[in-house]
Structure formats: C-alpha cells, structure tokens
Image 1 (cartoon, helix red, strand yellow):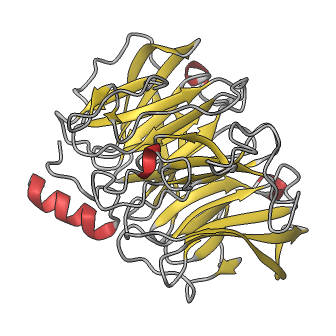
Image 2: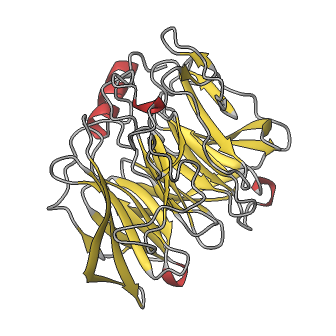
Length: 377
C-alpha cells in the first residue's frame, strides 16, 4: 500500500494522528536473542473497538467507538450489554474511548464524548454481571475545544482510585499551552475518588489538592495525548503512551510509590527534545522510552506489562505498538530504565488499544475490528 493512501485510510478511520505532518516512527530494532516468541490468535471481530477491560466472571468487555459495549466469550462478542450510540459522536477522535471496572467489579465506568464533544465519565452499577441502566450517573465532564486529542482512557490504580487521561485540547502544538497549565484538566492524568463524594472526591494526598492555583484532580501533567495508559499488575508502576506531535513518540513511566506531580514536559518538550524552541522545565520527567518517525509509525499505542502465564518469556515486559506501524514490541524496564527493546515479530494491524484479562493475558484491538489474543508461537 502506498504511504499516502495508508495515511488517508488511517485518518479516516480514527484521527489518532491529528496534526501529523509526515507519517514517519521507530527505526526497526533488531530482535534481541532470547526475546519472547508470540503469535496473535484472532478471537473476535468488533466494530471499531477502542478499549477493553477485565469484567465479572473472568470476562473481557470491549468498547466499540460508536457507543456499544460487548462481552467477549469463547464464541466471540455477544450482543451489546450497553448502548449509548445515540449520545456520542465519532467525528475527529471522538466516540466511546474508554471503560473500566472498579476493584470490586461492582461499578462500570465509561469515557466518551457526548454530542457536543464534551468528554464525559459515567458510572453504572453492575449486578451479577449485568449493567444496571437505571443507576447511571455522570461523574466528571470536560469541555473539549477541538475534535482531537481527547485522550479518554480510564483505569483504576492499585490504590483504588480512578485515573482519567485527557489530551491537551487539540488543535496542533498545544496552542493554549494547556499541557503546562495547572488550572485546567486538559493535558493531564487525573486521580479521583468516584465513590467518595458527589459527584466525586479529590484524594487528600493528590499533589495539588488544596492548591488554590491548581486543579486538585491533577495527578501528573505535561501530556499531549495520553491515548492509552496502564498500571503494572505486578509492581503497580504506571506507564503512559503519549502520542507525539510530529517527530517523537514517547512512553512515560512512574514508580508505584510515586506521590504524583510529574511534569512530562509537553508542550515545551516532545520527548527529550525541546518543541519549537521550548525550554525544558526544571521538573521535567523525561520519557523512559522514545522513538522517532523514521519508519511507518506515527502514533504510539500504549499497552500493558505482561503478567500472564502462557508466554513465559514475556512476563514482566511492557508490550506496546503503534497505530500506523502495527508491530508489537516490548520493553524490559528495571528501576525506571529500559534495559532491552524487543521486536516481537508480529503485526496487529492498525493497533488502537490493548486489553488485559483477570489472568494477565493480553488482547490486541485493531480499529478495523480484529480482537486478537497474545499466545505463544
């Protein structure tokens, strides 16, 4: 496929590469000797899947961009267990973008853009694996000035709090400087207690809680479009795949004992590089890994640290991909430093997201519809 045609198809499918000037990512790394040998097994076909989460009874729930949620079983995906398709819009980078269960699997949270493009986090009670539609309530909203850089991923951390990722508001180059502003939720990773208040509470140990010049919900900042993030189910460490502007894709890391407040640099920095003459902030936390656009990649898709049982050689490695390149890669990280990068030798297509089940096994979601499981080769 010609590069120009491929770019057009990608942008038409989902604008994760908004403000992309030239589709060019990482130089192909050599496969490290002894790297895990994996295969991708297609287990279901969805309609523009965007996110997945481990649900009740060992299930995996899959969000589809237009507004439906379906449950994965041995027979594929069932009929929608939730449908908000008449409440969301899919222009630009909008849609149903994230879902998460609380630690007790008693509540389902969804992250979507409403018909006005406002980012919205809603909560539903779940009983016996069934969504209780009449319990729905809105937890948090954030107006979005543009159709791109919504972020939208949500996860519960090991501390039991809900983390929410929002992009910088879009438009290319962070025209309003939201990444470095502490009086806006845009360009941030948030940490809230959805059950602790009405509509939520701000944990007292959040880094900016009580600061009159900052939003108390902020956990970390300086993010451009943190499309997918995750917590290591083994260590509790946080990893964020932050989509770059035009030259560098980055993966950010924070240890499980972090007190928050990390500044990942955007839009003064793109990765470890000053952006358009920017000045590196004194408190800049550089990425644990970055790659340039010298290949076909253009938009990092953050994944998970593998904690399953079926691929022994992959345990403890952070698996990720790129929306345009599709190659699955892994990082071996020790004490906040990458000690090895591995090309896992398989391509998942236009990889838009990953999901992790209750056993730590990984699933790869391609925007074209394929839901695949990571298996041993």
